[in-house]
Length: 279
Image 1 (cartoon, rainbow, N blue to C red):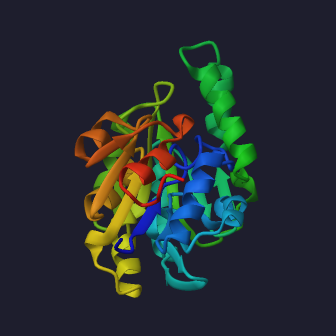
Image 2 (cartoon, rainbow, N blue to C red; image 1 turned 45 degrees about the vertical axis):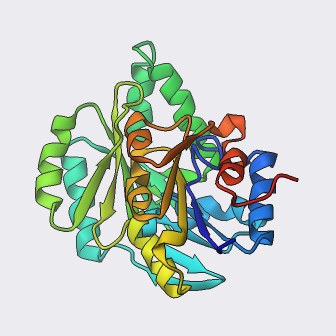
């Protein structure tokens, strides 16, 4: 069996969204794959601080902040936060257009409290009550703090939410040369959700960086994800697998679809594609 490099998204793939506990079947599959000689990497939009509870499961490295920070076998091989000029430009124009921001730094994430205040004041409308509960749980489990506690640390990525796509027209136009706007193809609670990511990196470029570092051909890479912020890694890897709970568009462009994260999807995918033996 040829050695493979397996790249796993976290939220919605390795764990349920916002959780730090993968199913036992996934932990077992990852251990077996590494015993077989494969490399297994986390490849996620989460910052490094959000990943820390998962590192006890032992991986060969991590791609954090959508490719902005990469560790391979304990060594940092890529580190690309925004410049101070970029940071000011992005934060200012998003705020000007009423876009709610969660900035992700190495040591944590910081979010505009106005988003939750808006949800609280409109809690009876549509799915806002459920969205508010989801946001509060995510912030608690992933160490997301109020924006008032942000102390100008370097920013790698910004998660955004707003009521309409029109609010993004000016930011997308002004920031187009430096930043990619990855907008989810499914809005949550009636809000537009997405990420603002530096064009210098993405998950696909991160996969190439690791393959080159380990002197492995790209066709021996396997990517498993669930949402459109995984698109670049899916189209880059030699084999792409979408979770059953994943977005319709990502399923369309993937090589295979496995069961959902709740239905032991990682283990099924590893077995189906002979990354591990059934034993």
